Amino acid sequence: MQQIRQLLNSGYKAGMPAIRLIGEDMKPQAFDVYSPKILAAIAGLEDILASRCIAIPMRRTDKKMPCLPPNFDGSEIRHQLYTLALTHFEAIHRNYFDRPDLHKLHNRSGELWSPLVALAAFFEEEGGVKGLLDAISEAAQWDEQMSEGKALSDREEAVLQALELMTRNELGEMWIKASQVREHVARLLGQPVEQLGHAQWIAHIMTRLQLLDTGNRKRQMDGMMYCIRRDVVLDMMRRYEIAAVS
Image 1 (cartoon, helix red, strand yellow):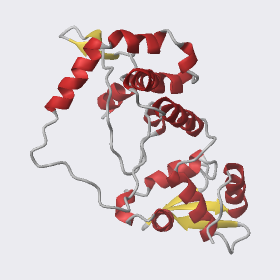
Image 2 (image 1 turned 90 degrees about the vertical axis):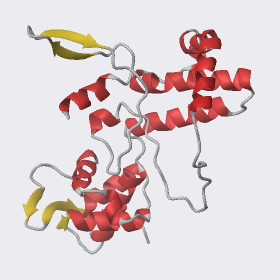
Image 3 (image 1 turned 60 degrees about the vertical axis):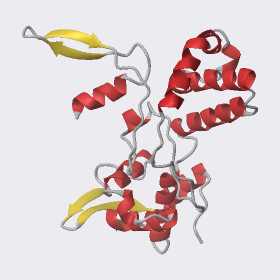
C-alpha cells in the first residue's frame, strides 16, 4: 500500500517521479508515473492524496438514468480522442503554456485544473461548446475554496449538523459514539449507513474542523467515543455558515 500511495501522490503532475531500488545493487531509479487516474471511495481519501485530486461528489439520482447498451464498445471514442490529440496538439499546447489569461489559479489548484481549462478553452473556441470555459473555471474556483478551507463538503456539513443535533440539550462537554454520529450523518445525507463505510473518517473530519484533540477520544468495547463541546460546534457552523437542522 505504501508503494501504491507513493505512485498516486507522485503521479498527479508531470515531473514528479517515483523512486525505486532496482537490481542486485539496489540502485535508485526514477520512474515517470504521471497520468490521469480515477479513484472511487466511499469514505473519502486521506488529506495528502485528497489535496492532489479533483473531487467529484456522487449523489443519488431522482430519475432513471440511461444505461449503456450491453454491446457498448468504447474503442471508437478512444480512436477519436487519439485523433484529437494528434491533430490539435498545437492549439491545446498554446492554451496551456502561452495564454496566462486563462489560468487564474495558482499552486496545486493551478496544477490540477490547468489541463482542463486549456481543453475547455479549445472546445469552446474551436468546437463551439458555449459556456464550457466558464463552467470549468467556476468549478476550479470552488475546488480551490474547498482546499483552502473556505467551504466544506456535504459530508463535513452533515457532521457539523449531526453534532449540533446530538448536543442540542447539553451545555458543556458530551461524550458521543462514532457510530451514532455516522447514523445521524447517513440520515442527513439520505444514504444507507453501510454506504458510509467504517466510522474512522468521522475522527478525521472532526480533527480537521478543530473539534477534537488527542485527549478528547477514548476507545470502548463498542467503538470510539469523542468528547464534543456544543459551543465549539456552533462556532464552527457560524464560521462556515452552516444552518442547523430543524
